[in-house]
Image (tube, rainbow, N blue to C red):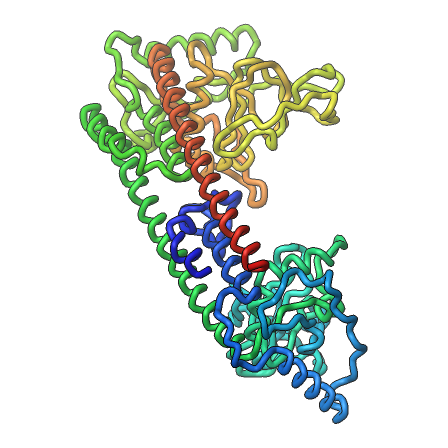
Length: 582
């Protein structure tokens, strides 16, 4: 069984899953990956431990039956001496309850037969005091160990049952999260009297080190999940006492605990190594991609790009590195470094002159309102240098940002597209769903947009939600429809608004703490990289080409990750099945 662990080290570390959202914890590395393989390895170690497959049995050791008899006699003595109350006998364990056969010398028992349990202290916020007794809660259990760095203290009378002692097992008995129920740690290193909270339980026995291994194992998790059928995620005292567990001889328990500690330390080492490796990889990718943006001219850019292209298969091996490549592509595009300039193209200044004439005509015809002229662009505002034929402009001078018609509920038909922020995936700007008015009726005004309008999510601009509409519809007022004047293509306008410099400006220009959004005046002041229509089309075509390449890389990566994950899961499942039958 140990060979399953040592012979598949590469597989355990390779099987990683991209995390779905923010946050870190054990099993998460700095590259945004959840270390699925190492998590499964930990589960395998614990499962083998409680099945008697992690350490060899010694027939000369005192069997677990004798240990259980000694525990029963000791409890009877304590009852007779009035130190504990006599408990109602627990139901016998039926043969159909036993999930697998045990090694010789082992016995099935119940937690209530080998130890005692209590539920903790109930207190209110008014009881909290800096000089009170510390109370252990769920957040004092971190990665299977006791964490005393964040203690709450209460000024309240604490009964003996609600006090924790050195060597007790602290168990989370109730939580809003199913995954947190059952997380446990040994209480060690306490230097003062402590209580434990009402949503916690303690378990006290002479074999708590081994019982912690059992409680952390998938076997205990399955048993808890099987009985936890209510909407409240909890372990009652009755659940805990009636939970059956495999009991090895006492000396074998010590060997099992020592071996588990040894192998968990190996898992920790693998996690650290993988995290360091991923961090180094991420830094390398960021450094190399930065050289592209900093290239002095087209020749240097081509040299730097070739250096990256020669190592494509080794550099872009994570979702984060591929996303970095996408973001760099957008940035290079708006800096004029993605495609070479054509001296025959019309200069951007000529296009700006036509835009100014068109705006003046629309104002004269009453189609748009005349706004106060936007300030000239100062040199210190410009985030980077542009090619000679390009120009900087204000977004409000080249688009109709903030000038959109309103749509009322009575003015749309059942088939009208009703767009909300939630319909657009963050960062990728992928349209997740199209919902019609028949399925999403609204009562307040919406923004009206038309086919080929760019629709920009101004709420939480760091979410980077920008799409080009492929039909007419209405959207939430947290999204702004806009279009460029004259010959600004919508795909190029979208590309600029998804570039790093624009996102950074938008994030720095928000107001509101809980719901940050960019105001219209700030948005109209944003800088826009103006380029000829012909080069806009060349840029968009090159971006589309590179985005397709990134999507192919990501698809290959997902296929490889799925294969690694399936391999890890299959090995663990087969090993667990073998451990219970072999």
